[in-house]
Amino acid sequence: MIPEGYEKVGESNDCTQIPSIITTDDDDDNGGGGGGGTRVKKQGTPTVLGASTSQCGMYLFDFMRQGIPNDEWEVKKLQWFLIGQGYFITATGIFDAATDDAVRKFQLKYQSEVLTPWFVIGFVPHNNPTGWVYQLTRWKINNIVCPGSEALPTLIP
Image (cartoon, one colour):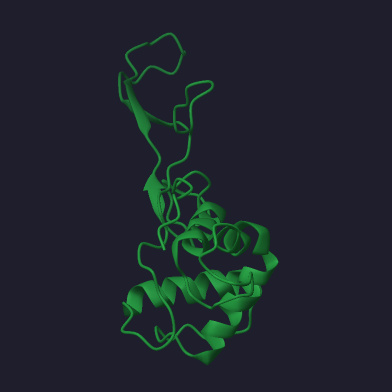
């Protein structure tokens, strides 16, 4: 539930306060008398035409895979993302076999963007899923959560 006076930011569960304009009510021409007061008018977030209005940033920061020490919070965020994409896993913070399997299925879904480039540059002899959340898989996830939050990486094997 989003608290009153706040709005949701992007696809995340983050919220930002809605800016307000406070004006003084000095006019007595409304016929009601009673003097001045203060009115608060809720305003939407200001925008500039043609400018990006994204208020979110990168979602995942780490590279992760099964069998190495991973940051528990980063793994939980990955798991929440995968759950939101329809994969049936539990958010435990541990990069387990179920998480690995869900990442591989995600990689197959976006194979041309996250796997094939590695094959094309000759880093791997195939374009099969690896289960590794590395440069392109992390980039794709971040750009699903918040488009434009991470630039397409230059592949570094």
